[in-house]
Image (cartoon, rainbow, N blue to C red; front, side, top):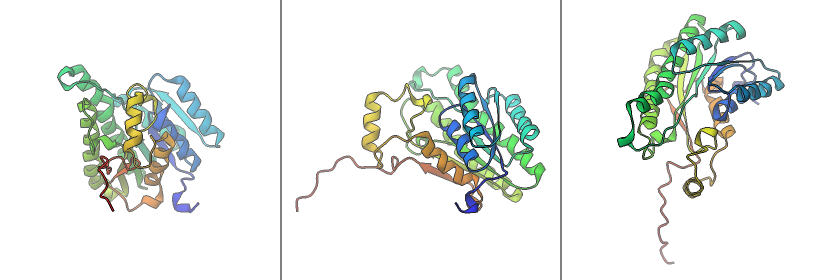
Length: 264
């Protein structure tokens, strides 16, 4: 592997690292040579499993239980990374929740609760990462997990899609603010992914439609998203900032509806 894609000696933070995409990003970072700190919410078994996979690769891992919708928890995660790993070179905001509900039935608590982790938590994470990276003076990488749903919205998911759109706007604005400090800020937008977060929403009918609509013909495994995220964290992406990278198997570009062919 080209050294530009290696992360040996890097210190990385990932929110929501106990399962799904977050867990696979943690492991992919370790596989590339980084030590990892992460936060989970009430999932000690998942956290232990992720930690074991990272340590099996010969890298360090520290996990803490907390809520990314709470700035105190996020700032504590940053301090843990500095204390245990020696600093922060990479920060991946990933922790999120999903709510599929009619807009007319969406309550104030639904709205604020969903935005807590899905948007405010990303602000807290970006701020904690940026403060530490600027203090270190050696640059860094911030990667925000958005969603292909902000490009091709879904019905009955207004709070979720609002948060994902806000993440992309914040990513672009923050990329400009932090560029003088050699800190890049990018977003990665997964399409349909088989994760615990989506287990309830992905009924058999939903899966069938996705297989028809996704150009590559399958719902993604979390590792397929994680590998793309690693690129944005490496030196290879040093000239990429303020960008949202779609990783959706061709879902959002597919306008095919089965037109009848012209006769030859």
